Length: 187
Image (cartoon, rainbow, N blue to C red):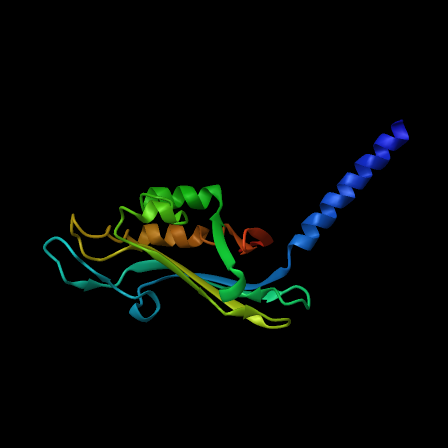
């Protein structure tokens, strides 16, 4: 009976290790994060209320550039047809810094609703063997205009520096439909 228990334990341990290793079908080639204020990359916000109504402002944003590569020779699929999705999941420290500096968790899209700010992402259209894929995500942090009816004000440079220093303390999760296909530490 004791031998059977040991054999079953070893079997389950090996099975779980195999399952974890087959889950990572992507490799992280490079991850870079910066704080930017660039209309070409972020767009602009037109204020719809307050004393600055009609004025166009460019937000300051936390900007991720992540380069991925297939870990094997199989094609994952087309982003437009097979719903390849990405999610950046912050560490507890990064989430806490975001809450303290911005006032909410910028990685949770639902928390943007009252801020007057936004977020966005873009990616290459397919994952082909031996080809790099660039995933870009940005999370608006504020604007330079102070208006009680407008978006939140950009935090001080000192605070933005703290956020940037912790920004790679996160995990990128890649999904094909609802199924997780890769989990990659950004640091």
